[in-house]
Amino acid sequence: MRHRKSGRILGRKSAHRKAMFRNMVTSLIEHERITTTEPKAKELRRFADRTISISLRLGDVLSKPREERSQEEQARYVHALRMAARMIRTRSVLHKLFDVVAPMMKGRPGGYTRLIKMGPRPGDAAPMCLVELVKPETPAPAETAA
Image (cartoon, rainbow, N blue to C red; front, side):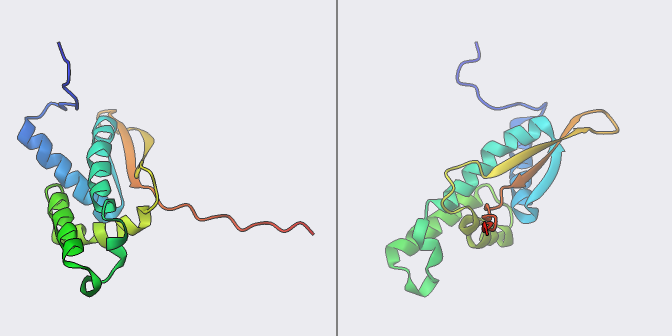
């Protein structure tokens, strides 16, 4: 039976799989869009959304400068940094997550990534997918009826 066994194996050992998804989440946040196979993209969405939601739990603490944060708020910020650092490999991307991506996703209830199917890969016909971070919706200019 396969009860409570979530996630795709993707033909890899667990250590390889974890390292691959850490690298992919880091690349996704760094470049804001990556191309990969469809099964990997669907699995990557779980890790990326979870990592982004770690940074969003801070709420208003993100908008305050470091000097204005209370000791408790700074402790929450450091804890969130360390939790996200378990998935993100580089320090610059980690700070991009908290300084750029989290404010961009603020107020969004979930679904921080978008998958766009691209068709088969030329070499082996593997289904390819574009994974990108969802940009905030900009309201269209209102048309005035004259």
